[in-house]
Image 1 (cartoon, rainbow, N blue to C red):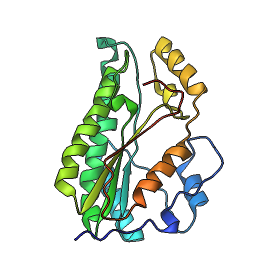
Image 2 (cartoon, rainbow, N blue to C red):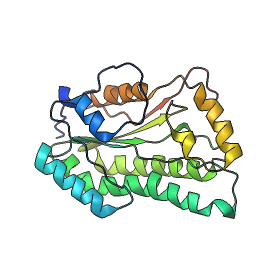
Image 3 (cartoon, rainbow, N blue to C red):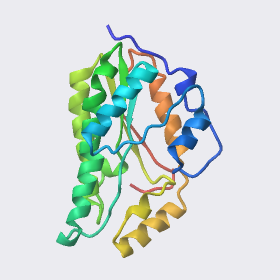
Image 4 (spheres, rainbow, N blue to C red):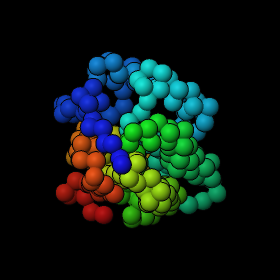
Length: 224
């Protein structure tokens, strides 16, 4: 029988004024308080993730929730010139999530936990210039569906699929014409990182017998 652990206050995500999405990890931990710790790790390095998992276990008693949020968006027309960008996106967006989950899985299974995989609208709709990025998000969705069938009822697996969110994602793009086009969309983004965090919190706080598979969210004015 799955023993669902409600999200305690120290791990909750209370509503706060909009703020830049990217901040130093230590500053975020200090803001959260209640014993929060900040650990920096490269999701493409399994050894770093193993060390992170061990520290979480030793200092916090283990992880109840894992949110796979690391990602880069290197959009461009498809060409051999961008091959390194494609490899980076696959390694971070898809393999990074898979490796982090593999490393933390035993902790999540210990008494029942939640796995949150951050996908994207691009995991449902692939547009011009987003082919490989979309492939990583379609991959997240397919892997999550399979994993959900394996892990329920012990671990709930939820996919969050945001549209355009006010973050630094467009600054990753190297292809200049593509970056400028994407930046125009992000400059008027209405959905914030806090909005997405509140949706995640909502999903986590549902009763243990309730499994939410996917949540697609975007601004009311964004066309898919």
